[in-house]
Image 1 (cartoon, one colour):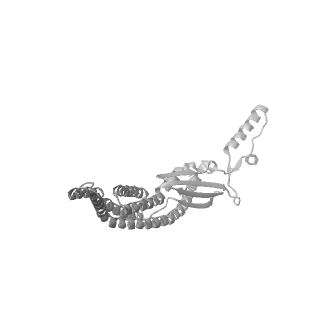
Image 2 (cartoon, helix red, strand yellow; image 1 turned 90 degrees about the vertical axis):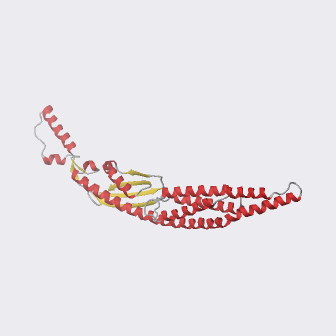
Image 3 (cartoon, rainbow, N blue to C red; image 1 turned 30 degrees about the vertical axis):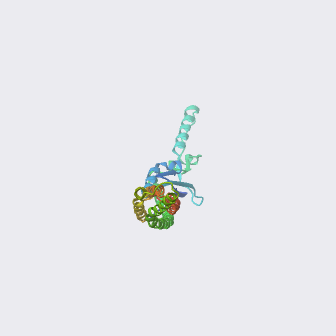
Length: 299
């Protein structure tokens, strides 16, 4: 089964007073390139999330977007701002030492001061024990988005494989026509050459030499022989069909086979001194170009 490199997946969840949305999209790329875009305070999770993506996807440029916003329906937990508390206590000591003011602020006094209790806004304010839980829910959300992406890539892959198989059938049909035409190339050349030589002999240009004619035809037959190229093409067609059924990434292998098929077709075109064969070569090259464009989307 072939997979496309183009796809999109998303997931969303609520946790810790936030609504978090995760989106992942992939497009064509020669290698596997993963780009992560997420809030700065979550960069500690980036490496683990990237490895999750790379374990599931082998080729393509994959962009992962993680976005968060405060959940208006849920009050964020308030936590102690230790930096503000230290500043207030330091100010109280200065009041006592510089101005002789007596008394220590009570707990209730401190809690009533501005910015002593703040809502958690980012990982800097989330207790250490909650970080593992955040990592768990982020990985779970990425898993869901990846599954959605893979389903889309699989559907696209089926369409690509179907189109490629149809085009391979067309190539096989052209190959059969070329195989049938190949033996006629030498006989057509012999008949045309004999006719021209006979006409020239009748005009008295030079005497007809049957032996030299045979040698010329033998040289032409050897030079225009395309049997090996046709045999290799047939092998490449079969290998391509097998790759399209594989569960492993096959895009690079398929690209290599297409290059080899183009090489064989070009060789046939250079050897074939025959109009009907040349026409089939042109058609085959056009079909191979369409296959190459489609195969560029396969993982």
